[in-house]
Each structure stands twice: as structure tokens, then as C-alpha cells.
Image (cartoon, rainbow, N blue to C red; front, side):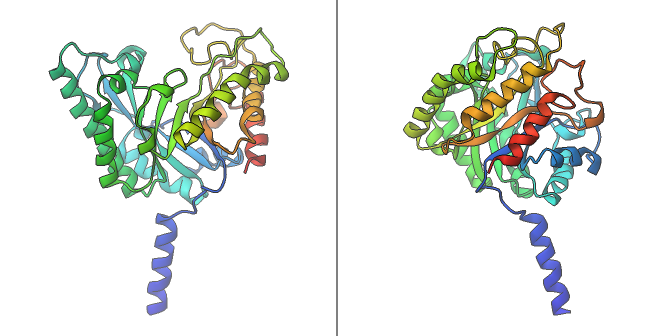
Length: 336
């Protein structure tokens, strides 16, 4: 009986405390929330890339950039965007030794950029801050309960950072009262140097859509050369903040000139160019893989229904069933 209890306890600890991958680069995929519950068929293609991390992204919704209330965990949301979906999904990745970053996002109706959130009065700002705090602390509790290794406390909220930096210092303390894992924040590539609270976090998180202005099909050598000024700036910033740089998002569409405005998803009708996407990702890996101050990153983005995602007529960010997927597999396998 004692032996049986010991074995059950050991098994429980293995489930709750998966092996941590902190000694390796974070080879991550941004895993899009599923409409329904996750199953093993959603996980196997992730494992086949040799990814050792995924980002799970629950969503809160706002009607406009002037809406002071964030709504989340709603009955009509996709399962993967909610607490119930996160809790259901986590064990599938843990069973395959894949770590998780929980990265709550805000979606504003119409796809309005979150960095433009603004209010005309301090009272409205205060109401929004209260709502945002509830949103993040809710998912901090989710991260604690599921023993998630890394929590991102916000994504591209430059206007809120500028309005009241002190709010973030207090929010981070409140998060730490609930959750004891590692923390980051995801700021846009052109705003990360304005964030004043990196010293309170474990990583400098950057949504790394740095523009590399080039022609239709730039060579790897040209792309690597275009990365060099950014690489130096990021190295300097990492040393200044005494924090590793984590690409909380990095990705390219499979179109001509995919590196020129890599954040731009607005123009739908574009010629397919899988080579441009693959070369852009390879240039990124070649530029950063040997840098000890670079923690790794999360490729934007990976859809659960792998067999029906991406492909040679698809011009979205998905690398699936395109040459980019082979690049990811090659570098995820070799990165340590």
C-alpha cells in the first residue's frame, strides 16, 4: 500500500512538474487556440518540428480602443482562448515534454492595434487599468494552477505603458503574489526600449517584426547583413538591462518582400512566395542562434489543424506545409 501511494504521488508530480527546458534555447511556436478541445492529432505535428515550447494565447475582447472594459472567458469564445481550453490543452504538451508560455492577448473589434488604446479622462484610464488587472491576474492564477513555466503579462500596450508606468510595477508585484514562474512582457520591435520595468521581469520580450528593406527575393547574405544593426542594438540593450532577449513573436508571410513590413497582414491579395518566407526565417536563425544573450523565440503562428493549414497557395504567416516548415525543423533540431 505504501509503495502504491509513493508511485501515485511520483506520477502526480511528473504530470504537474514537467521537465524544464531552461538550459536550451526556447524553440517555440505560437499555437493558435482551437475551436474545440485539443487532441493528440493537434500536438503531434508540433512535436515533429522539434519545438520545445509553445505559446498559448487566451483572448480578452474590447469593442473599441476607447472601451474601458475587457471581456474574457466568454461562452462564445473558442475553447483555446479561454481558461477551460488552456487547462484542457496544457497536459497534452506536458506529456510530450513541451513547455508553455501563457500569453494573454487583447483583441479590439476590427483588428485595431492595441498600442492605440487611449481615453479622454483619468477616470476612464483607471477603469481600464482595473479591468486589465483583473484580466491578467485571472490568467496568472491559470498559469499557477497549471504550473506553466512562463507568463507574459501583456502584448503591445505601448500607450498604457506610457500613460502610467507605475501601474505596471504594481501589477507585476500583484502577479508575483499569485504566480512564481518566470515573467516577460511582449513589446513591439520599435518600442521595447521605452519600457521602464524590464528589471522586474525575467526576459526582455520583443515582438520582433524588425523591417529588413529588400527586394522581392533577397539572398540570405543580404538579409543577414540587414539584421546586423538590430543584432548589435539588441546585444547592447540586453547588457544594459542584464536580461536575455526573447522574441515573444517572430514571423513572416509567404509573399514577395516579406521582410519589408513583416507585421503587415492587412493586404490579402499578394503573390505566394514560400522561398521568401523560408529565407527570412533562416536569416533570423543564422543571425541569432549563436548569441548567448538571445533566449530564443516563438514563431508566429501555428494552427492546430496542421493537415489543412498553410500550403503553397497560402500567403499568411503560417509556415505549415511550406518550405518554412523545413527551415524550422532544421534549426529547432540543431539549436540547444
